[in-house]
Amino acid sequence: MGLGGAPGAQAQYAHNPFFEAMQLQSQAFGLEMIGQSLRLVDALDAPLDEDFLEQVERMTLSDFARFGGTLAKLDGELAAKLMAALEAVTEAAEAGDDATALVVDAKRLLANAYDVLIDPATQDTAAFKAAVLANLLLAEGGVAEAYEEAVEELWEFPNGWGGLVRVRILWTEIEPLATPQHQADGREMIDEMTVLFPAPQPPDPFVGKNPEEAEAPAQRLVGIIEEVADAALYPGRDLAILAGHLAKVLAPSCQAYTDGADEIAAEGIYTVHDHYANHLGFLLDLIAPEVHEQTTGYFAGLITVEEDNGEHEDGDPEGAHRDGDPEGAHRDGDNDGNENGVSAAEACLGLIDAFMEAKRVVGG
Image (cartoon, rainbow, N blue to C red; front, side, top):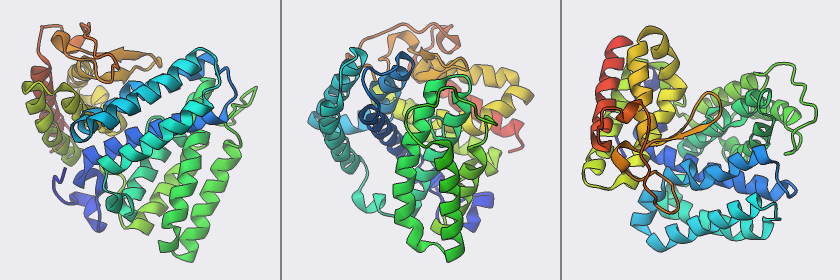
């Protein structure tokens, strides 16, 4: 969705993918995270560790929900086949069986879905690849976080290895655009992270010197990629502008909820939740805790969100579809987002109001 050019400090770059096509990048991230889970199912021996199965189960929940509504609208048969293939992989993994044969079919369908959702010409641009790289490196489920989370949840570790596999591929594709110095620096950062993630299997015992040891090379690599792709990759540089933009991104979702298109609507909620969690949430919790509490309550009432303890909370104001549920079941949410019986559309509008207040609080 084209929602304006590069604002504020981002304007020094020719491209601003997270502002120009925020929801498209979220859809791409969902596709990438499914690909990452399939890569890991392929790489790890069965039976998979019970803790790692939680990563696999996300494929049919929050990952698919990032794009599933749009894919169903564009190609309903492909959407159904992809979901069925992901369910088959998940069920085999849960049963302790070798799912590698099933992964082959799921990967093929996922590649088809990628091309249906995102024009291959767009996929081939440096700015798009740069944004995907930034998410793979720094977003929840990415390389930097995987190392940090592994300190307490060991089986988050494979995500770092799986993400780094894809990072290497995409970096190779944009590396020819880099100066010799940037090429050398980029390879150095990837080599540093490779030392931390030498294999998909988490080391036993895990003795990381610093939980944030992967953060520095990941951040530096994203900074290099910004320069190489001439694309702004830190949407949180101006929080007031970000908060206002997130309110704009939510508007189509609120209308979609009103129209009963819950799966389409949820894609926008996931998009906005990522940027809230990564850039705004912590600050608002400190300076405007009431706004933060209201916002997180609404999110939990609309989508599957991961709480601080690693558990997932499924939201569903007034029995709306739980996003990503393969059976389309209805569930009643029990959270702040619907404690007064608000509908999904009303919760979405409440989020818009919360973001406008957040914009004011952070100086907009």
